[in-house]
Length: 519
Image 1 (cartoon, one colour):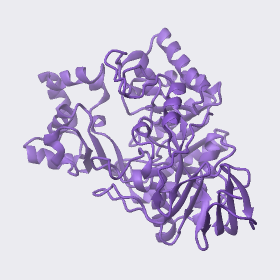
Image 2 (tube, rainbow, N blue to C red; image 1 turned 45 degrees about the horizontal axis):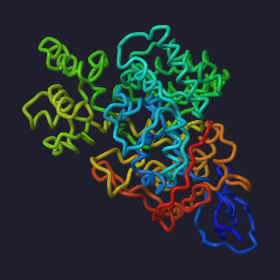
Image 3 (cartoon, rainbow, N blue to C red; image 1 turned 90 degrees about the vertical axis):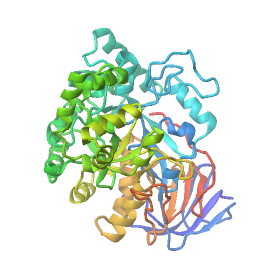
Image 4 (cartoon, rainbow, N blue to C red; image 1 turned 90 degrees about the horizontal axis):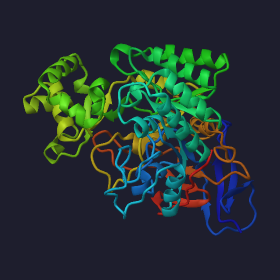
């Protein structure tokens, strides 16, 4: 007696091989038969004409603390994602001081006893597994989180003792199961770090077979130099390298992605294990705070706000901001100040005109009134570049987004949270014909599984974990848009996580069978 049996499915095994027709049977969390399955099942699905593949792996996710508040991970599982790689861009759930709301410096005093607390990866894992989660999770330790824990937001090199403590924290996370170290080198405090600091921390991770995931220091005019730095870190630390959301930003830089691809190809020929991930959109999403040079954020938010108000510092900053010419591309996605809610969906230039301010002044006003927490969508990429990157065999899919619930989520976030994987299958495979369907599936399954070193997921084969997705290649498509992002996709029929049905007939079952994987 099988737990669930898919009859007459078109099977993609995840390797890039052509599909074949077979039954796929699941029992006790594992795939137990691929072929002609005899016997009965608790649930039998007529999969004739539908495709079944390994569950999709989101190689770049920001669901760390979101999974505590939204453990059903709706926006991801509804598009077939069964595993998220969290702790990206230098920001992770750990290490965390008790009482902190995230990366802050709060101590035990004032901690809410009704909220879950953790301090390290082991205790975070226990919190997540105790409440249950609908997706599997592969955690990284964030360099920025470690640095903030040890040094706050100081704009200086660490002392010898501080560097030693950071290395010990990275080693502790690796011992507790982290898959590697991530950096976000355009974000505070990562931007304050020298290359040598990051090499040393990656050496600590390398002792445990860690991988280096990096949002590089520059994705515009200095893209190639930033790529050189990432490759140097991987080479000297002896760690594999994963380039996060591989792209080039800014119209003046469009087309240079070809040079970056050739750099990576050369490095791979010379023996560096380097790969990348990508989301299939021409817009990125980040905090508006990144529009302000990092030097102004030194010491933390309160010190930064003091500089915003200081006449001389404000004049100097506004002069710098006046040189930015992309304000019309920066669209507000979310903010907290009630009187500013009307600005969601408008760009910074429009908001400035409405307030009678320059775009730079509007930027500072938004940051001040919203405690520096303003999310934007930035339309700064070329569709040609997106397709060029997608065509590269060592580039996998990563949403760069959190797992959201369409009924509860607020603001106007990037649609990639709801549409990354189905968009590739619908738009770029079926409509444009950029990729073969089996190649697109490979980029979402066995390729990221290989990157993570997973031996029991990413390929549809007997004896493997039953992370599976059944979809209709003729109708699968993303429905989320920039103006109406909170919409689930079409065409995903079934999703299984560790053999349990999480999506049935296009509806979330509410089940939480996910695991926190240990490297």
